[in-house]
Image 1 (cartoon, rainbow, N blue to C red):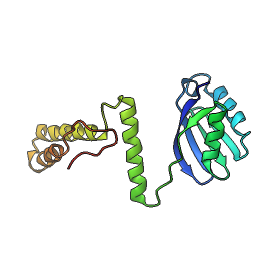
Image 2 (spheres, rainbow, N blue to C red; image 1 turned 45 degrees about the vertical axis):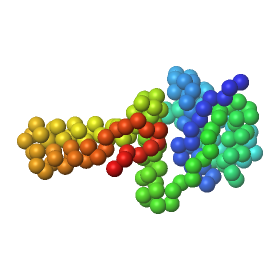
Image 3 (cartoon, rainbow, N blue to C red; image 1 turned 90 degrees about the vertical axis):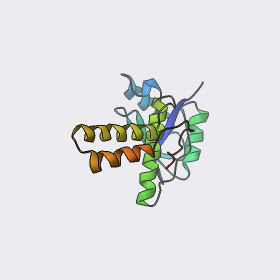
Image 4 (cartoon, one colour; image 1 turned 60 degrees about the horizontal axis):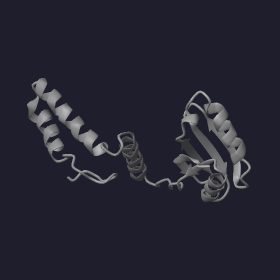
Length: 165
């Protein structure tokens, strides 16, 4: 049986929030599907409690020890295949960077890798520059926005790469 994919949305020691990617996790039968997964997952010796969240298609897993043991348990039983838990960055800038990286991953995932935050940023700057020109504010507003867009021209890149300044 191929296990559905699960993505670690948030992890702190002893607590992990997982988003399940299967259609059953978000459809009309989400509650029963997530309840079944929760009932099976609490059989893992490291799991303390599991809270299904049908509105978001996610599970909150309270555990002891290393989450990797919980992920292995779920994978071996065909419940889901979760990637490794990412450590929570300790600095505010690190947390912001992690959120931006996750947002870029989601944009690329939904566009089949064709668009990333660099492309979205480029077109947003162009649009804002155009709006400022229409308002008659070429200097300094539109000029600054368009110059920033020119330094952020999207190009063929690998997923997750940053724009070239």
